[in-house]
Image 1 (cartoon, one colour):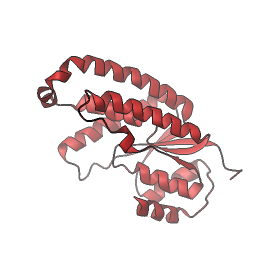
Image 2 (image 1 turned 45 degrees about the vertical axis):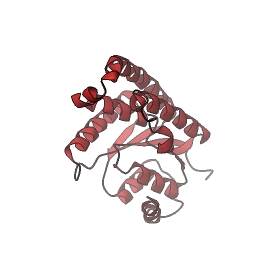
Image 3 (image 1 turned 180 degrees about the horizontal axis):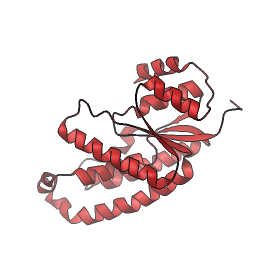
Image 4 (image 1 turned 180 degrees about the vertical axis):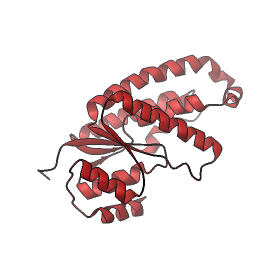
Length: 208
């Protein structure tokens, strides 16, 4: 482990793209610490105005900064500090008129919500630039999703890719079988192999 390179890697992608499985398998195979947070801790507080786009992303960001800082210079992050902000911004962009008709009390806060997320984007992008040595972005699987879900995933996927480009941090866009992804990433960064990749992948899939 003393010969292992310092590497702060983040795995990004839309929900269902396999981020957690990749992080788990990569951590098991190479010994990198696994940085993640509990989704329960970032769920919006019921009935709080704009909770999903204001409260949740801020709490998620704070927890990720703390979690990753505790792990030092060797970890793989499940989602990165961009994740909760990207979910919130995608939700804002894909809202339909019906949402505002059902919640007219939120209408006066639309401008605040937009400005807040622009400001928050600046914060998370600056943090990403100084935190990660590289990103692995998982292509989303468009098969088997219904129309509303597909639109959300498409917008989120594009937003993440555009944001990764803006960070200027090196990133790889990949997809395919889990074993191939883990093997490729481990080889690209010359990571040590503590256990065979197939065994790490099987353990990650069993834990899912």
